[in-house]
Length: 82
Image (tube, rainbow, N blue to C red; front, side, top):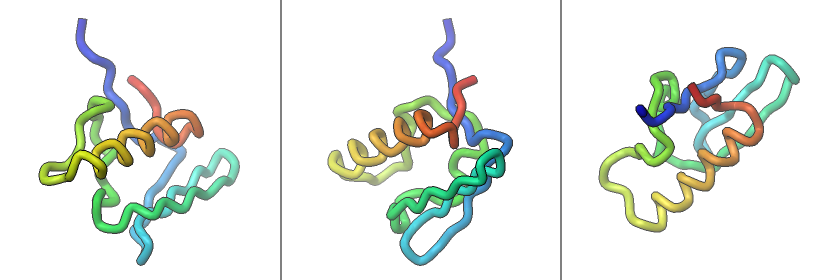
């Protein structure tokens, strides 16, 4: 059985800001300010990825932080599982 992928919800958009990423959910509307710095590009979740698929070159601490962040995005509905 293939692992389910995660992807940005079709009602959500992401924009790069000085602090990191701004997530906008048009169903709410709701905003999420994410102090990710340059760890993730704004188009990172436009393609389906596994939960633990993260950019190369991250420290273990950065990976753990981003994995918690991905879980928060899923819980808040900005990302969806396929």
